[in-house]
Image (cartoon, rainbow, N blue to C red):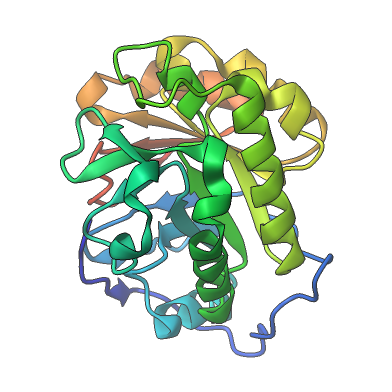
Length: 265
């Protein structure tokens, strides 16, 4: 998803600090409105406390502006699939690249059961995330083992154990760099991950009825960002009250994540 990012409408608050956290000491993610957008011009609203944007396309200056404005910046990293538009695409061994990711041209699953073969590439991404000044990581596609039980097969016959081993390594690597990390979907993994992850980001949890799975995050006072999509026919009048009831931050976005999302009141 290549795009040019521009930030508008920010009132800068100087003195916010730009130093990175020490290893084994990462910042707490605010439980407030999230702006989640991975492409297109980014115009942050005045009530936003957390922003989530693409690692490669977001500049250091943009991250610094957000931090000076008191906004917690999270970098999006696809850890379970490979995208042919990213600069490090050619570094991945061909034998760990699997079937196409259904619905997204140019994206293919990764063999996370052999993540050691591309671990150095992910480590470089985490380093870049920290160097740009981000404070947290959104790891996408940590549910590859579930895809092998659907019509979006990865081509590798991945297991739940494979997934947990890989995600455990991801958590260790991100935390060692002084960054927070969140659980992206994969509700069946909540029991193993809620004690180690710092926030959660859900897609279509209201539509598909898996909000309950993430209540442990709310009980531990860790933020849950629940996103529903316009193209899937979401009704904010029905979704937003449910999000509030669960203690989740509700967001209504577009599937391409190329436009300004709307936050539930």
